[in-house]
Length: 112
Image: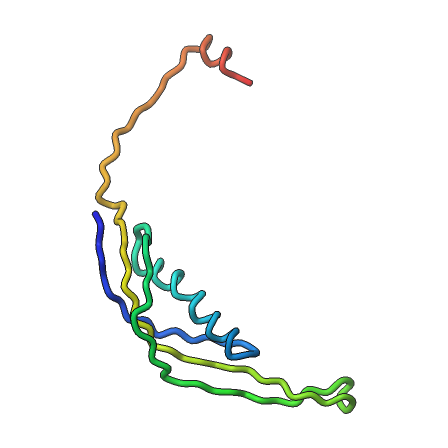
C-alpha cells in the first residue's frame, strides 16, 4: 500500500557553525520519520520550515588554563519542519512460503 502524508517535525540541531547546525537538522529528518513509519520511505520533501529557537553559546577556551585564549561558538537551532512524505507499507504484502528439501545426495553435491 502506498501512502502520501504530511508530517510536522520539531528537530534540534547543533554545530560549531550555522551551516553545521542546519545540516544536523536535515540529517535527523529521515531517522525521525523511520521511527514513526515502519514501511519504506520513498520520498521526503520539505515544504515549510520555521525556526522556533536559535541560540549562540560563546565560551573562551585557553591552553593550559591561561595561554592562547580563543572564543568558541556553539549554534543550537530548534526548527519546526513540515514534510510531505511518500511511504510504501510492507505490512500489507502477502508472501508465499516455499521450502526446498534436498535429499542427502543432493545436499552433498551442492556443498562447496
